Length: 357
Image (spheres, rainbow, N blue to C red):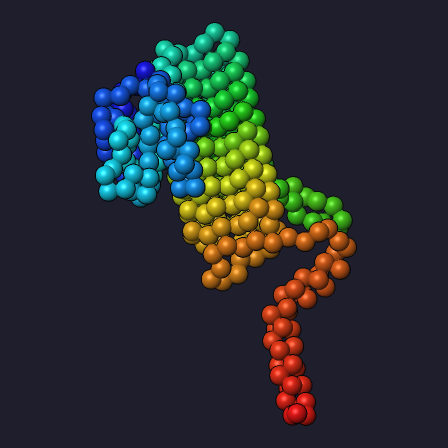
């Protein structure tokens, strides 16, 4: 069971003071068991209202405590204010996220290398780190405090993994990579495989050794079966706080800025730089050597060949067709605004030629 006042204090701490909240009508003394949806909540649960269109559900909810914004409180209860326990906060959705982190927190197991784990004698394992049976930590690797490496995971030679990071089962981190603090790497993801680098020679392909690595900064989450290739000469980079969904491919030498979110099945070709605070829709295909600015969005299933200056959102796709037909169609589409203006000008000129009645 969780007291609301304790949740409020810890959420404010976890958010770095960004998410203060105010309990009303005795909410601070309430004890709740878990979160529940508005329409299925019970008196021993807490529910939140993230979208104003669900205000009617919130009013009818049986939740012991409601988490709502000030604007929703005023719209629902008027000047008199609520007559039931509520918590007022500027972002109920984020409040829910932090509270659920607290509610689902598990006690850390005792640190140590479990029987059946394979740890090279030259690897450095922090006292509170856990290396589960079947995991492998290669020569010279470093595993930080509170980090957990699950069965089947592999940490390559010289790779450094920070504190309080989770490598779930069958994660592979190749040699010479760096993983930050408080990261989560889900099962099957591969960090640091060779980038797709080959030089053409007389109809054949000559492999280019990829001597860079991968750097993943603090508070990054990487989804199941996502692959991030190592750089050709310098490191591929994912900056602090970014979130990558399942089955994403990030090519060699790519850079992803801070707090960018990328949805599943996105493919990013090599040497593309994605800015901070961007949103990339699922199944987007992004060409190589593109600079995508900060704070922009790419729509789902969008094929992005270049970034158009001053655009904040880019979206679009064509059904598959022959390459030459596609090129012709693309040119026509790009010229549509010009053609529309020309048609309007012709219409105006034709109207001027018409005899007046």
